[in-house]
Image (cartoon, rainbow, N blue to C red; front, side, top):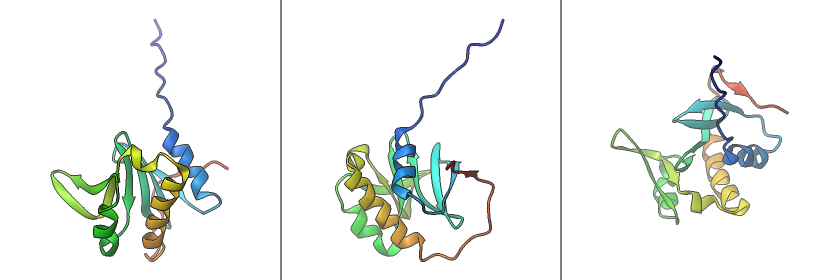
Length: 124
């Protein structure tokens, strides 16, 4: 007897981020239980079941963490300086999402390019 097919509902945030990134050259990689978007091999922003993971860098961390619906990202009980978790309420509108994406781009675009990693390329 064949196993029933399991279907996982697509994450609508992935489509929103793809649209918001537009024609930028980016890749996608499965990380942290979601999909992370990479520019020049550097993690930019990612999805999770609990909201958005945003890389803002250490210099912008405190100011961005003070914004509504944002808090420092924690892994293994340790705060990850330069990375924030944004609750779904903080990305409800396209303008909210664009603001977080702009913060992440402002930092990640200052980083040197990394060697290409094994990633999923976006479909065009």
